[in-house]
Length: 564
Ligand code: F6P
Image (cartoon, rainbow, N blue to C red; front, top):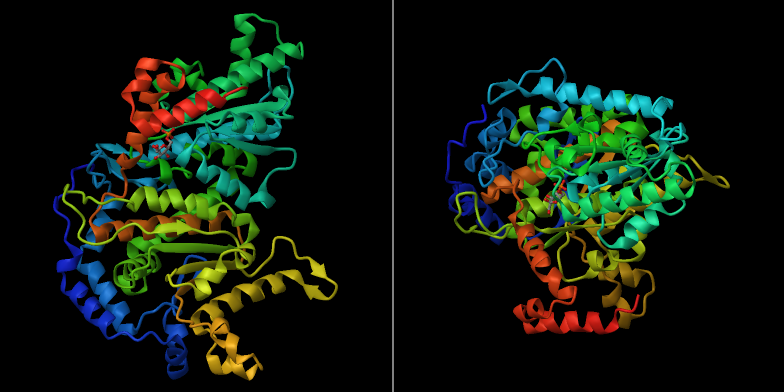
C-alpha cells in the first residue's frame, strides 16, 4: 500500500446523471415537511438510521425518497465507495502532500494488520499507545514526580489547531471521567495573555507541560513552549526549589516537559529528551490527530481504559462507514445531505447544536475539521471546482443558542441546516422541585427541531388571538432542515463515535467536490506574511516601507499607541 492514487482526475459531480436528476428534483421541489409527515406516517422511521450507539434521524431534512436515492446514486457516480476503500487501505489520497490518510489506523484493534510501505502500521500504533499509556499510568499513580518529588496535579497541553482543539474539546466533553486530583489546561494562542492566564495560580512543582505539535515548527507552540520553560525555571528558582545551575534546569525540564510530534529530531533540538516524547506519523493529519499521541493529555487525565474506549468508539463508526451500503450509511448520507443543502438549496452555513453543555467546544473543533478540510476552490488534480464547496460550520450548545441566534434560523432569509445532538441520560440528574431538569432541557431539543420543521401558520397565530398587524411577524414558515443525533449517554466511546462520524461526513463531501480534504495550503500565506512583517512591527523603517499603505497605517497606529 502507500501507492499513489490510481484515478488522478476526480469525477466532476456536475456531469453525472445523478446531479442532473437532483437538479430536476430541486426544480420540482415544494418543501412541505408538514404535509410530508402528515401523508407518510413511515417517513421518520424510514429516514432514521443507527450507527454504533448513535441514533440519527434525517427525516426533518428537505428531501424526498427520490432525492435521497439520487444522492446515493451521486455517491456511487463519484466513486465514493472506491475512494473510501482507498483511504482505509492507505493509498496516497492526500495528493498535494503525497501522503496516505490513515487516521482510521489509529483506532484499529491490536489484532488488525495494515501495511503501509512494507510496514504493519498497527504494530507502530499500538507500540506508541502502550508508551503513552505507561506514561499516563505513572502520572496518575504519582510515580512520575516533579523535580522536588511532588506528584503531578496539572497537565498543561501546549499546541494549536489540531494539536489543541481535539484535546481541549474532549477534555471538556468528558469532565466526569477526569481523575480526581488531576486537571488540564490548554495553551494555544500566541497572544501572551493565553500563557499568562493559564499559568496563573499554578504550582510549578506539580505542573507538567505537554508540548504537542505535529511538525514541531509551529511558531505559536514553540514560542509558548519557550515561555512555559522560562516560567517553570523562574518560578522554581524563586521558590528556592532549584538553584541556577544548568544541570538542575535540565533535570527540571526533563521532569516537567514531555512532547508529542512526528518530528522527534526537532523535539530533541528544543531540549526535550526524546525518551519523554511520543511520536506519530505523517499519515495523520493535524485535525485528525486527537486519537493519536496528540491525545496524551487525555490519556493522562481520563486514564488508559477510557482512552481505549474512546478509540473503540471511533472504530465502531469506521466499521460502519467502511461496510454499510451507502443507502443506510450514516456518514455517507449526512455528507450527501450536506451536498444537497449546499449545492441545491444554497445553504452557506451549517449549525451544530449540542444539547449538552459538556460539548460546548464541539462546534469549534468541527470548524477546523470541516473548514480546513473542505474550504477549497481547487480539485485534487489542480483544476477549479465545478460547484460551491465548504460551508461555514458554527454553533453553540442549546439552550444558550436559543436565546441568541436561533431567531435567524427560525425566521431569517438564509437556510441554515442544523445538526442537533442530545443524550438520554444526564451526567447530573438534578431536580428542580418535582421537575427533572434534564427533561426540561431535552424538551427544548425536541421542541426546537419540531418548530424548525413544522413552523406555525398564520391561522395558528390568529387562533391565539394575536393582533392582525403582528401576525406576519409571528408566523414561522417551517421547512428549516435539521438532523437529530441521539445517544444514551456522553461516554468516551460516544465522543469517539461523534468525532469519527464528522470526519467521514467531511470526507464524503470532499470526494463529491473532488477536493483534497487533507491538505491546508490556505493557512500558509498568512504565516509567511506574519514572518515578513515582524521586523516592521519591531521598528525597522525599511521593512515598513516594503508593506502596503493600509498595513503601514495599521503598524504606525500600533507604534504610536504601544505604551506597555
Ligand atoms: O496552520 C494550520 C496547521 O497546520 C493545522 O493544520 C495544524 O493542526 C496546526 O497548524 C498545528 O500544527 P502542528 O501540530 O504542526 O503544530
